[in-house]
Each structure stands twice: as structure tokens, then as C-alpha cells.
Image (cartoon, rainbow, N blue to C red; front, side):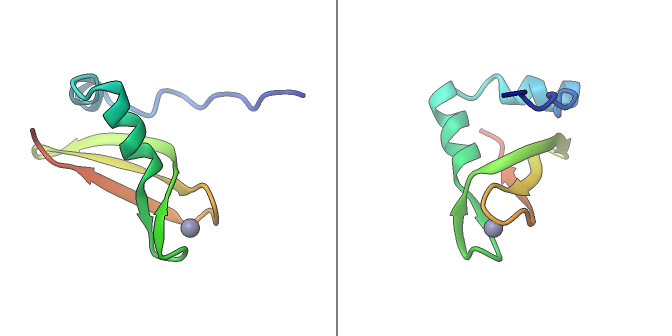
Length: 77
Ligand SMILES: [Zn+2]
């Protein structure tokens, strides 16, 4: 089986700086539990982009179940 080519690193430098401060177990929990308005529940996100907006980290991507665009805000510590 051929693995799909990994997209470019979705994190901007500033977002990456914020992201690495989060423990790995919490990162996994965040990525596995993003609200999807179509599935009406928590779904895994396929991460496409992560950037800082003011002091919040914004994770953007698509729903792993239905492909809808979803995003999640990670608030400052
Ligand atoms: Zn969905």
C-alpha cells in the first residue's frame, strides 16, 4: 500500500511553539475531539493548518468522518 504524501507542516512557527508546550496526551485528546456540526459530535480532525490568532491557537482541518471543514480553538494556558 502506498502511503499518501504528507502535506507540508501545518503549523506556523508561532503555532508550533505553542503546540509543543501541550503534553502529548493532551495533544492527542485535542485532535481526537473536535466538534463537527454535521456529525453533531466530537470527531478526529485531519489537521491541515494551525496558526495563532491573538493568544489562541487555531487548529483547522477536516472531519475524519464526513470531510466537513472543522476547527478548534486552543485557549491560552
Ligand atoms: Zn463530520
